[in-house]
Image (cartoon, rainbow, N blue to C red; front, side, top):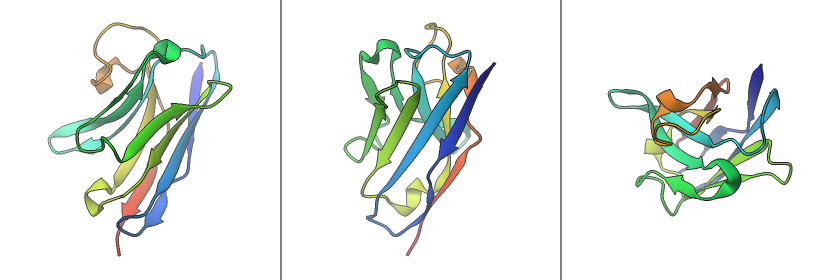
Amino acid sequence: QVQLVQYGGGLVQPGGSLILSCVTSGRTFNNHAMGWFRPGVGKEREFVAATSSGGVGNYYADSVKGRFTISRGVARNTVFLEMKWLDPEDTAVYYCGLRSGDSGSLYEFKTYDSWGQGTQVTVSA
C-alpha cells in the first residue's frame, strides 16, 4: 500500500514564498509520475503541476507557470512544490498525487491513484 504524507503550507503574505513537500512510502516505485492539485471552480481537483515518470519533464498550469516549480528529491521518493510570488488566488488546500501507471493525461486528477492528506496554503495580508 502506498502512503503519501505532505509537509509545509501555512499562511503567507501576497508576494511571498512557500515550499510544499510530499513523501511517499510503502510499495512505491521511485519513477512514478507525481503531481500537485488544488480544488478549482467546478472541479474537484484542478491541475497545478506534475513531474513525469523517469523525470522526463515537468508540466505546469498556466496560472502558476513561472512562479511554481516542481522537483524531486535526491532519493526520488519525495516531490516538492516551490511556490513563489504567491497571490491570494493561490489560497487553497493542495494535494499531491501519485500515478501507478502511464495511461491517461498527467493533467487529469482521476488518473492518479494515491493522494496525500492535503495541505492548506493561505495567501493573505
